[in-house]
Length: 209
Image (cartoon, rainbow, N blue to C red):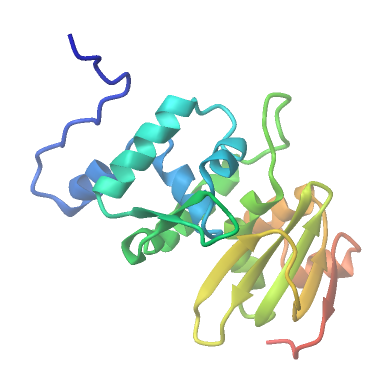
C-alpha cells in the first residue's frame, strides 16, 4: 500500500470570495512565516528550518511543495562551486509583504516581553520596524540588536525590502534593543523619541526625511 502523506494539503474553502481564495493559498500553519523568511531573500532548506523553530522537517517540506504548487515559491540550484538549492519567492509571493505588514501592525499590541519559551531572531523585527523608519530615512538602514543584525531598504517612491545580516554599505545604522523595537513597532515611541531618550542610536550618511 502506498504511504500516505502525513500532512496532506487542506481542501479549498470552495467559496467564491477573494478572502477565501487567499486563505486557500496562505491560510495553512507556517505558510506566512515561510513567506516572512523568504522576503529576506533566497534561503536554503536548512536555513529556513533553523529560523523556523518548532516546524518539523516533513511539515516544512510539505509547505514548500504546496507553495511551489500555488506559484508562491520557486526552487533553483545555486551556480558552482556551491552545490545547493535555494527557495525564493515569486513576484506573487513577494506581493504578500503588505499582508505581513498589516498582520505585524495588528499583532504588535500583543507583543509583550518575550516569554521563556519564545525564540527570537533579529530579522523578525524588520517588518514591524518599517513603519517607524519610513519618512525618517531613505536608502539602506542596518539595524543591530543584541540578537544580531538585519537591514532594510527604503526607497523614496515607497518601495521597501529587507534582508538578514549586515549590509555592505548602509546609508544609516540604527543600534537599539528588542524592547525598543517592540515599542517602535507598536507605535508607543517614534524613532526620534527613542533616540532622544537614549534608547536608540541612529547614525546617518543621508539627509533626514
